[in-house]
Length: 261
Image 1: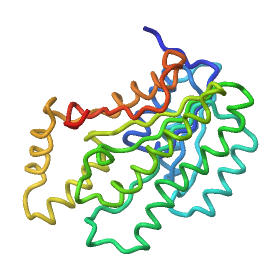
Image 2 (image 1 turned 30 degrees about the horizontal axis):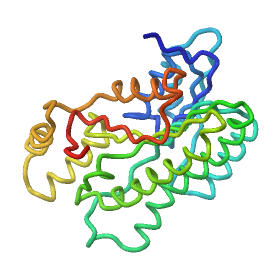
Image 3 (image 1 turned 45 degrees about the vertical axis):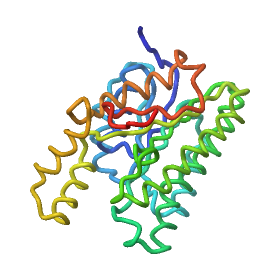
Image 4 (image 1 turned 180 degrees about the horizontal axis):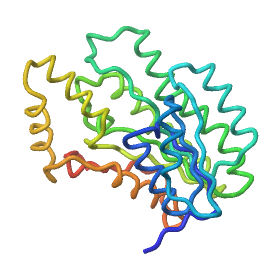
């Protein structure tokens, strides 16, 4: 099965590295014009040149900080007032690790702004032109912690669950317009972010990082970490016409980690 996204434009959040860039690269390989969106302008300048491209594609980047909502809102308003986005990949920077006893109400508010408020606002602006065109894809990147909470990621557990249920509600409202809304439930993917979390756990538990990593792999039936490219392949399928009858779902990509149905 060949997937073509030629003539489509994509805005990919958190795409200066890891999962976000893995998705951006695959979308570009399938013919979409991709705009990277993250904080690291220097890195995105380099990465945008490395994206697969033909004569019909125009790749770009957008510098945003999801933790500064007022600035983010201003930048997104200007960007989307001038451009149409067919495929929106809602992926933001992460939030600090920690359990429920270590977080203040301000921590929850900051996490809400980053993980939920930015996602909802960007979608609300982008979907207007999607409705006019009668076609669109909104894909929210979430986490296995929405189904099986990870105690050391209480902020992510709480707010990402809200993203999934909001996405389900939005999918019902947008289905008549030819717009699908889906969430990807992300497992343990081999990224810098996961390595950082493992280092934190190593320090807190006073055990080697290698032991942390080995424990994670043993908990996954596939006995390995996922690859950003595998995330990209799933997102590209969901973004294509091949998946036009799939909406309102939350699809795990976790090597079998989740035990729930």
